[in-house]
Length: 185
Image (tube, rainbow, N blue to C red):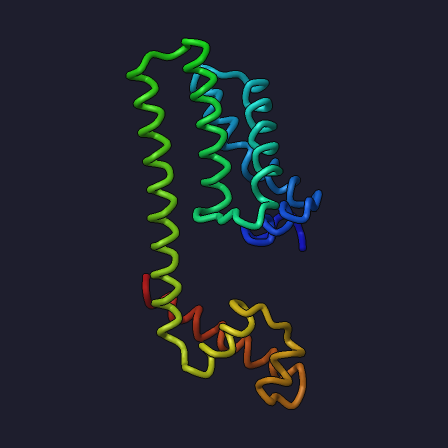
């Protein structure tokens, strides 16, 4: 899987198995928002690198544990750890006063709520599109994208004569979904 197309879940599983590609993803996609937050809040790029390294160490400690349960997106979790570490460092060095700290904590809460709202809006949108396709397509698309079954498995389970027929049906179902999403706008 390419670094650009790896899902949050795949990245999480990669971290759990200490896969180097998962760490590349963290630096490519998650570090910039942490760096932006820190540099806009009395910090330097070096501070951002230090905080992100501490965040990675925390992840390495927590993620492999069996009782660890990620309840937010990985990006929100990383941002929360990093921002909390940074705010603690600022508080400990007396670089900010309490009113600024309150503002940063409100910012973090607003960030988490906005991400939750965006996720919920995406889910609602996907469900609305899903309701625009036939039942046969719902079952097929669920098998391919939710259950992550490969096309060979789908060909056998759904009784298609060959792989090409299954791919054609997948394409037709995706076209139905695309047309359904256009009607939502």
